[in-house]
Length: 319
Length: 196
Image 1 (cartoon, rainbow over the protein chains, first blue to last red):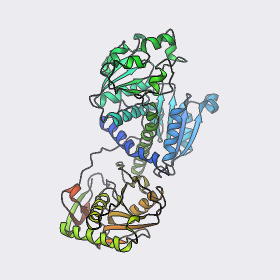
Image 2 (cartoon, one colour; image 1 turned 45 degrees about the vertical axis):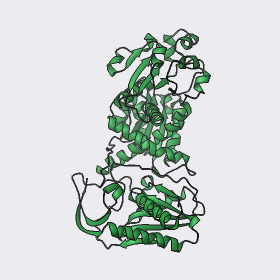
Image 3 (spheres, chains in turn orange, red; image 1 turned 30 degrees about the vertical axis):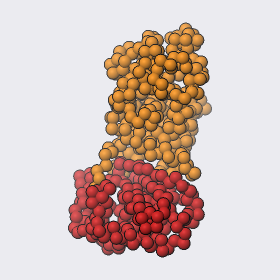
Image 4 (tube, rainbow over the protein chains, first blue to last red; image 1 turned 135 degrees about the vertical axis):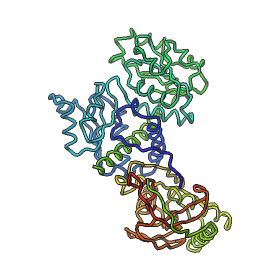
């Protein structure tokens, strides 16, 4: 008998990439690869999560992540309920744990949560038997975004090990950057972060990344560049004087890409601020894989939902 | 992880080869038009059997029969009890199934649950005219009203016995053995095959 090379997935939650092993991350990416085909079928649905209920609990506005999770859950035949805290009892002062326990009392199987506080997903997961998937918590982590970035990179370049990946933008306030750093370094990629000094968190070098404040340096020799969204409506604004100045010093333009590898991959988690993080001709250009990231996000989230649901079912049958 | 304790060899390489030739001829005999036939192998060993049958078609009739693969993991009815090793393999049917005669191919027919899952999945890809089932070994103990149209060999077994099909592409040798499953420390079976 051929021995399968896969390892077991035993976690009921997906909270971060920091605490996942290289093998666990690879298992998610590998599972996602086989899920991608489902979205190309005539009937874009498989019954794997039939009878499961998934709740999208979002404490922050989100369109793409929420819809991506919703599409992923529905392609696995789960039932999906969306809770936006703007219109819920959270407004009346209900605590996160109470909200979670009430959702669990509805016999919900998976809670997908976005929260503005770092660590919120971990706290909820500890209190509940239901699975919790972190869809972004404060400045901490956004694991499925990093997983889909890695999935896209691996699909495009065939590997992650040894790749040079530069992350440009507000590193200090970015959960996307954090998750990418954990995931990419675990899988053997070399990560460079590039931002103005004030947007680089202190002692980030300890995570094994290279730091630069010069965009040309970040582009030189990079196999891929992941351009983060500048959140001028939020944290980034306090740290940088003007959007135009940011674009002039750090924006990705056709001109700047001339100094980079010809086939450098340009990624962006969306939504793009055209003319701030990158110019339109780059966003829509041949190096851009931005829309492929969106497509791959579904496969990655399907894989995550499938794995945590399975693990949790197994944990329950053992008890 | 459970271990296989072998009792006897049922088929050797030569017998497997002859059976596949016979089964290919039976497909031919029962199908009015060669152009309507498509093969769909069930992961893992069904795919390799399908590839061999495709090769025999090419050799004897000089036709290229389309071949698809089906991974039924996501259509299983026991996802929660098989343990935490869901290995989802590739499903690939890149031709139209509509009005085709599909020959579904698997190595061992046992409870029939794999085939139930495979039929459900197949129907999500289109509407074939006829679906037939080909298996190398039928070991009995059906739990669903399912039967095979083309059977390599009927092997009567007891419920706690197990049949292992080994194919050179994966296992280095072509043979079929019967044995017993000895449960290991964690007490549950692994892998994507129901019948093992």
